[in-house]
Image (cartoon, rainbow, N blue to C red; front, side, top):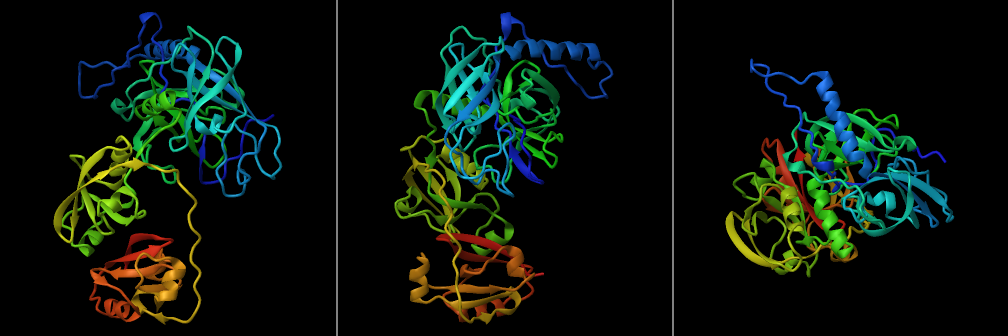
Length: 489
């Protein structure tokens, strides 16, 4: 069966790699040092010769390849029927899924042995739904494996084979990785096992859209193709510093932009999965947003660092119990300064569930503090359907929306957290509101620093605008608050 998969144009595809946390074993005490590249202005410096660089590649390959495995999976139950639908990502190395009837399907991927007793790090999308898992070792043996645990939020998984004295890879420190370093990708592209490609680190700390808040990817131009899923990304010391997990491609193959989960994340996930079979993350229960100058001005906040609380999840969430609310800016968490919303999410997720921490925040220009005990982060659920509203409204002119005052009936129907405001009945095409992402059914509660309780409040707030280039609008959508910046130019 053809393991290759079509990749939808302009979409990120999940190569789902088999080992982030894996590393490689320094065989017989033999190590290979990275070539030392130095600035051209150093007259004493000498670049390595092509022969020296080639020998380093050869040495690293001999060191790591024994720990790289080929994975075959069988699923007797169907995957999600959406997979393979138009407009959705395809996973290279796996067959096209569709239809709806359960059937036997097969797929392939890569992985890396990270302990001599047979623990293997791989991607969740490779083995997460498999009914049967078989691993082919570098020496040609094929053995059955069992799933130890999976972590969909980082797309990592751990499986195990019942073997001993295995060659294994050592995890390196991805936090020391620098742009421009040589790296090697190992795996089974298109089923060609034990294939090695080389390139450089083209970027570090890459934050990709729609991939979750817990991974800042390593970007590389080392060739990554269908079947590389789960394979290690290795530095020139023979250390695994990432797991090849995604590519950006319009053709279905490598176009020089691939992404790997850093080993700093993989090692933590691996430890959790081996110990508990799952990953437990701390949870505040807030919807966060980075501050912009216009938002900061609207909420009377002096500065641009911190994490803006757009909304609090529910009444029994830690943040709600601690008294946090929409419009607060969290500036310190457990003694650590907070600079961005992503940073706060990562720090909170890495904090033990049940731990009580102090949180400092700014509200109405005043610094306040509270203590809260972190809950366990829940799995992401499906988003609520957009509200559908009908009826005549009144146009607000410059903002480009038609609105109606919120009635008690509307508040009950939409289960609004604030029972007043105005609901958007229509959005003017190509107007400021549409360009900012406002939608029919959104409820506006504030414009700038003006609270909006009805249609007249909104009309007054908009008519009082005097040459402002941007305004910040607080809305409620699908049960969540959000701050939206609207350009008035």
